[in-house]
Image 1 (cartoon, rainbow, N blue to C red):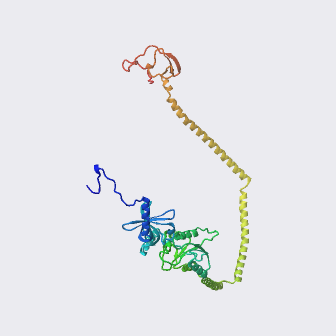
Image 2 (image 1 turned 135 degrees about the vertical axis):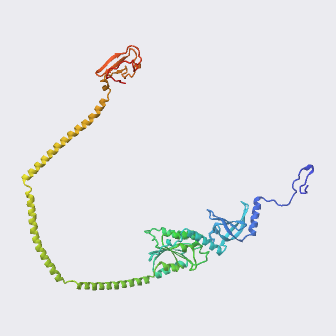
Image 3 (image 1 turned 120 degrees about the horizontal axis):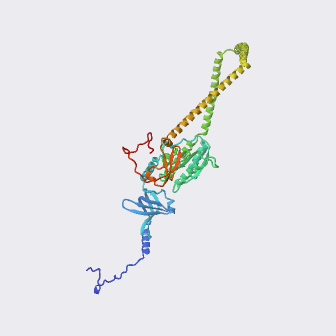
Length: 484
């Protein structure tokens, strides 16, 4: 038996031996572990991939950092989350700085993140490339979606920071080239919430009514100065790209320097290498426009003068081929005299012809002729009336004859024709015709109908068997047939 299991006399097991090891409650032990972890790992930097990212309603961020073999829970409180340089997403490889602590309520340790950086430029570029392919597949970067910029916008809306040098450069350049009404929508251009503010500004400009108190811009410029790729991340967010692609107002993106490229550049209608270049794209040079208008005016004047001179020369050339006005009037006067003479003669001839035609028609309207025609029409009317009356009478006689034929047919089928040949019908007391002798009982009253009327009778004697036809049968009166 093992020495570690002491046995008392009688075979009963003994209690544990006294010890000087201190005894802790669960809460005391959890708090000591918490202090030990926080003192040992008061500030650490951990590299890993974000997994299970969740933003709570309170604003705190909860996620895990994982590598190929392990997982570390992490939390970023609301105040620190607002200062993060990147926007966390699942699958993003980052380097987090903060302290380790434990959560006694679940007996687990976690990292409290104070700062977050992307693990490297390669990881950030891979993330942007993945996002770019996703948005391009939705058609947000299609060339057919891009619209031309207005030539002379009355109002220009600028989305940028109101305190930077960008807005001053844009206003200064616009004032030099073509002074225009400018509306500035101030936004953050870097850090937490910057992307949402830029997207709201684009949508806000588009939501302005055309006839409202605040004029609706004809052109939008989204601008920001240069910076690192991390500084420009707000303009790579999906919310900004979708707002730019959905803008009904033509939009110029002017983010960073000429070598900087963000995803909003692909969704905008025009990309400017710098904010100053965006102002140059937005409006023409006023003095150049004035000079062009003056040049066009001078060219128009010279063109009109040359055209008038050419038309006058052409008119003079046509005039030389025409006869003079006096000659034209003499010919017209002679033709007028000729037509006047012909008109007088035509009037006399026409009046004579009309008079002759009228006299001819009047001759046909003598009273005797009219009476003769009236008598003729009366005779025709009486003749037609007599023919119509005869036709109606004949039609009536034919119809009566056709109606009499079915009645004669029905009368020929009547049983009274059979009675005329010597037959009789015997009716019982119920008024129905009797068809056999079996229905006639002795003493029964019957009615016999013959050709000339009916008589009452009474049955006497018993029933007799019907006589057979043959040699012993009684002779039937000549010409008499059977009724049934």
